[in-house]
Length: 333
Length: 142
Image (cartoon, rainbow over all chains, first blue to last red):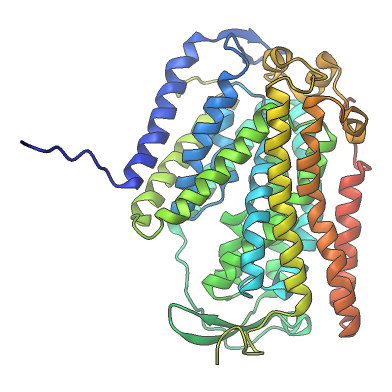
């Protein structure tokens, strides 16, 4: 008897999951009664039972978590533009949940990175102080803009997301950059160290340069992270790796650890302002975390380059949709 | 030499304590979130804002949402911990407080090493995070 093989590579299931989630969202959009909000924009008034959107969010975030790990980006950077574009929640609550999502992911990853000495405390702590202080400013600015005119925030969010997609497309990481001479500030902070690279089976010593420039850049990163609730792994890694010259593994690990500090300060601003709705925030956190665990297991068999390009396309689309929404053009639905 | 015994590649002891607190706290926070969420959505613990009311209003901006649903802001949720929806904030607040606790653990290590630069950075970070948590930078319901 002829046997059919229905097994697909797991990555195909993950991609299919996101596509199915998107299709479902598009199909359900016309089913929502539209109401006009106080700001004059069109906002969706739900006619679905209360459990519908949290359940869709849980499933959607599960697949998003898989894709985020495989593409090497944080959950927050995908979560905020996609959920604000396709779900009926106000951007204030999406940003609040986005920060909680990024924070929970960073906190869960932090211990392993610290124990293996991959996350560098000496590099993270000065940058974290700058970034967390500015993320408070960013969060307050974002909430002010949202109150003033949410369209401005949508356009800024869209432009930032398009910028991130271009950054992901253009940036070429360097595994172990060559740093000839450490700058005075980096030396004073004692930034540098030695780690054991398991893939190369050797001890790697490293140091950094351009510390003042990096500190300045972290002001901007902090503001953007707080303003849009994005997390900031997309920006931390290039700064550590390309600007400061830290090895890629140290940069990725330190970036993840840094997020746990930067997002803490901004998360408190959003919690205190009432921007966290547990009914939608908790399924997002749980879905993304479960998806991340599965994503880590799929890393060895996935084709990260394909996933990365797919994420860049999704980010470009999500960014353009946010701009479209902010400008009320209506080209992208 | 194994990477775990090599003094060059070994993290400082406070870093391990930091990692242990972070690990336990993060998983405890997530577990609390899952349990309290189940209690909330199953109606085991009654909510301050009815589920249907949340769904009807989550398209509003935060000021309008607070006004319409009579939600608390700042640390007001602590007074409503007996309600299913605000019970959920326990897990989230634990996650958001973890880093402050971990930084306090780092401080004695830097004092022992007389590393005053990093001691000051840590202390300043504790102040920044505590100020953010305090609600001093403005709480909703303008």
